[in-house]
Amino acid sequence: MAEKTLTRADLSEAVYREVGLSRQESATLVEAVLDLLSDTLANGESVKLSSFGSFVLRDKNGRVGRNPKTGEEVPIDPRRVLVFKPSQVLKDRIDAALSK
Amino acid sequence: MIKSELIEKLAEDHPHLYQRDVERVVNTILEEVTVALEQGNRVELRGFGAFSVRNRPARQGRNPRTGDSVAVKEKHVPFFKTGKELRERVDAINS
Image (tube, rainbow over all chains, first blue to last red; front, side, top):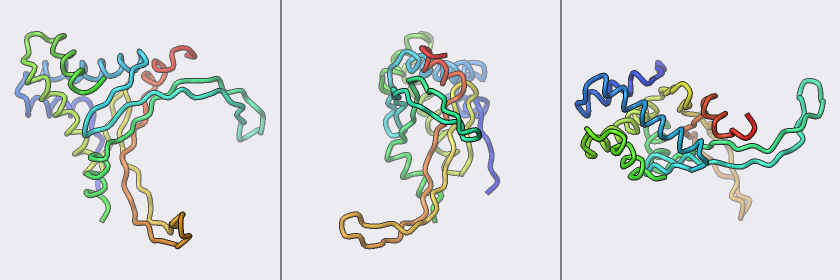
């Protein structure tokens, strides 16, 4: 299958086509959605989008890591990471479309 | 935050739009990402992250209760890799 990469421009185009806002406004709204998602997550709040998936924050403990090349021990600080948990609906749709 | 709260907040920030249209914007974006993934495409949103599909090949699994070996079919699963900017913002205490 020829793989294509969609970007913000494709999402704006879809909004323009489906919702009927101007191109300018469609682009602004796509950016506003991504900004609000990012700001919410940056504030430490998870986001749940029904039938799509959840963006969940996870606090990882610090641990001793190792440089795989040199074998040297390096401390890894505790950190917070973002994980996307796809909903069952999304998983089912993608698997149905692609696994034959 | 859940989807309805996201829509409400966006509608507040864009008072000249109907909430109904804001709802359609959000749903259109999510549907567009889903359709792209269904077609095996990637969605790359700089600063936010990238959605892609990962292939899990068929394998010989085991029923953990009985120990019987079972054939597990090939699977395609959605995957999200957090973008650099968002990754750093989420972990602001360290970065």
